[in-house]
Figure 1 (cartoon, one colour):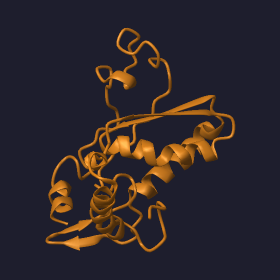
Figure 2 (cartoon, helix red, strand yellow):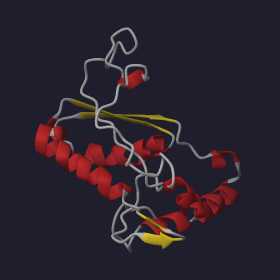
Figure 3 (cartoon, helix red, strand yellow):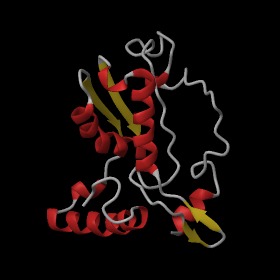
Figure 4 (cartoon, one colour):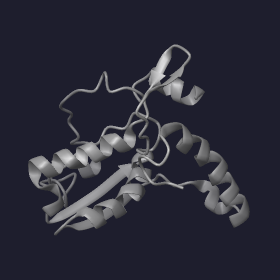
Length: 170
């Protein structure tokens, strides 16, 4: 909770300071400049803002009160609403090709939502390109690895979801 609380007080924990328009021309896959992004420069790109600290998995209806702050865990809800909006406005699930990518927690989101997109697109080819978002527990023995992941993940999953609602992580 303390980590989530500290995050909520800065730019990584709130959308309050986010500008409606951003220039990504120096940022690799998001760049619109052919010399910086020769493959994807003219593709439509959608940037999902990350700010709830739950790796895009939170679906809690009510905020969690901690110290002087209400913490909102709605990453899953936000992603699903963005997919719904994109499909309503742009026929997203009927696109020719969808490339899902992310860095850090966005890399984890790429892993988590790639199967969802494969299952829900109608005519699209779906490619997932995570850029980081890996857990280093792979270097441990399976028994220890499972214990570390379970002990690290279950409190977060319990905190950010109401029962079985939201992202189906077990």
